[in-house]
Each structure stands twice: as structure tokens, then as C-alpha cells.
Figure 1 (tube, rainbow, N blue to C red):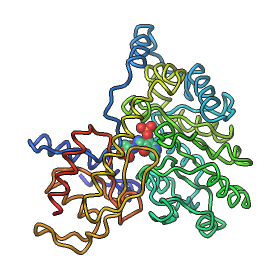
Figure 2 (cartoon, protein in one colour; figure 1 turned 60 degrees about the horizontal axis):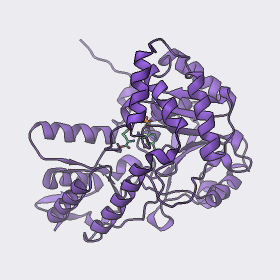
Figure 3 (cartoon, protein in one colour; figure 1 turned 60 degrees about the vertical axis):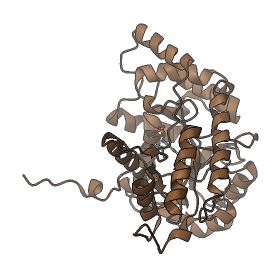
Figure 4 (cartoon, rainbow, N blue to C red; figure 1 turned 135 degrees about the vertical axis):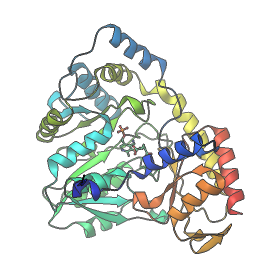
Length: 396
Ligand code: PMP
Ligand code: GLU
């Protein structure tokens, strides 16, 4: 039979993070001792108080379809969380709960982008932004940043990227993959450019909000004067609560956008899983201090990785202030031949490290930064030490 897939799917790249994780799993199944530093997934278990809430929900017979945009109690918990952690005042019609922040982002692209609309993506950006935008026939406009500005977009760069077709800016802070964090002052400077133009919106992905090592409060774009009605705040429980597989993400948005996401979701998924929603009510109603032990451990690991990488010539890093990734510039290796293998780019280096050091990383290409390599430190200290030892040996 002639198998004719759509151009849409044929033109879509496979998620590089998930592909690398699958490849590592495959090699492990063949008996290879792969250390996975590719996937951004906390290696902690979901905390017991959240698991207990899920068990209770099962026993209380939560088994029906939920409201498409989420249980009212969950939306109330999200509203409380936005007020408590971000000083943002949302109302019930402004909240939509989805199957992970990834679906929140896909909904937003689906309801906001018309064919040819431009979406500014400060690079490096999270792997799926570009393909989610393209799926809705939008045009990703990459704004390259470098280690010199801590991988942050400047107001001048933003101004230069804006055209009459610009619809939105998508970015994450803390950033996956660079770990960079925009301060309130930096967001304010960017907002001055945005507010000069009508109808440019910001999708502010704050899923790593709590994984912040600065000791300073997290800054949200929606807090900046004039930006509340121009911003969609995206968040979720995957990262800070170690709940990746539970698939709960959410948005706080202008109500016309939230209503449209609700409509979209009503035709596509009918909303998120009922048990995971009940568990998330418990997670969000607790103080974030309850999960601080994970963040403290991530900070120790960040320092460990940075310290160990100093011993490898050719890995130039910023100091990530949040999330759980380091994103070294590895272009010093390009053009070299190591162990008989030619390294032309970061993809070659990532494959070399997988084959020769048995360590899985992700090429910076997937994040719009082809000179870099992403290393996730959501792994134990022992694994991190062993992985970096192997990387050093392979490259020496
Ligand atoms: N945004 C960023 C920046 C991420 O790193 C992730 C990681 N999965 C997501 C969104 C999606 O998260 P989830 O769908 O698990 O809520
Ligand atoms: N966000 C994680 C990462 O960047 C999980 C993988 C994914 O959702 O693509 O590795």
C-alpha cells in the first residue's frame, strides 16, 4: 500500500531529547553501560505527599471526564500559587490545565498563530518550540545569543528581530538549555521594546521557576508593568515536583486566549488525567519549601559538573543560575579527529561521546545553538563523576 503521510509530519523534526533518551535505552537493552545525561527529567521519586493524594483520589472514585480546562479546585490552587509565588492575580477563566506544559504550548500555537506569523525564539531555546511553531504554520525567527551575554537576548537584538509579521516571543526562564535566568530589570528592558509594538505577545515558559540557585525571587514577565495582558505564563509540575510522567501543565493567560485553548483542548484531548489533577492540587497547595531538598541537591550537582568540566580543555561554560543543565560551547573540537572519528559539529561530538564514552548528551543543534552541547545533571553525583571522567578520557 502507498503510505502517504502528511507534509506536516514529514517536515517535523523528531524531538532530539526524546530521541537521545530512546537511543540510550536501546543501547542499555543491548547490555551497554550508558550514563544518560540527555533527558531533562528529575531522577527523584514524586514526593510521598503527592503520591498519597493520588491514591486517595483513586479510592474516592475520581474516574470521570474532568472539566476540559481542569477541576475548579485545581484551577483555584493554581490561582493561589500564582499569587503566592509570582504575585500575579489570575481569575478562573484565565487558567487552563493541560497534559503537560508541552500541550499548553501546542494549544497556544494552535490558537494564536496564523500561516506566516513570525515567532521570535531567543537561542538557545527549548527543543520543541521551533517544531510546535512550524506545526501551526508559523515561522520561527531565531535570535542568536552567546555565552558573553549569558545566553540572554538583549533589547537591541529583540528590536532588530521585530517585523510587521511578529506575533509572539517564546522563551523560558530559567532557560532550558542554558540555565540562564532573566532578572526583573532585564525583563523590564525587553518589555519597553515589546510595548512599543501593538499585538506582540510573550509566551513565558516558567516551568523551571523553583529550580533557581540565586536565592533571589523568580521574575515573571507578566509582573512587569504593562505586560500582564500581553503575556501567557506557562508552568507545570514536571520539574520541581518530579512529576514528568503525570503530565500536568497549565497556563495563566488573558481570558480570550484561555477560552480558545479550552475550545482547542475540548476537540483534541478532553483535558488532563483526573488522578494526576487531584494529586496536583495537593502539590500546588503546599509550600514550595517542601521540595527544596531536590533543588538543594541540584545545586550541589551543578557545582560539581562545573568543577569537573574545568578539567576538560574545550568546554566553555556559563554559570547556569537555574534548571538542571549545563550548555558548554564545544566548538574547540570542531575540525578535529579523535580516535579516528572526525568531529565536524556538536552532533558528531554528541555521537562520539555516546559511542566512545557511553555518555548520552544532546547536540546544541536541537536548541538552535550548533556550537554547544547540553548536559543534564538530573543524575546522581556518582553518575555525574563517572560520566565526566569517561568524557575526559575519551577526549584526551
Ligand atoms: N518547557 C520546557 C522549557 C521544558 O524543559 C519542558 C520539559 N519537558 C517543557 C516545557 C514541557 O514539560 P511537560 O510537558 O513535561 O510539562
Ligand atoms: N524537557 C525535557 C528535556 O528537555 C524532557 C524531554 C522533552 O519533553 O522533550 O529534556
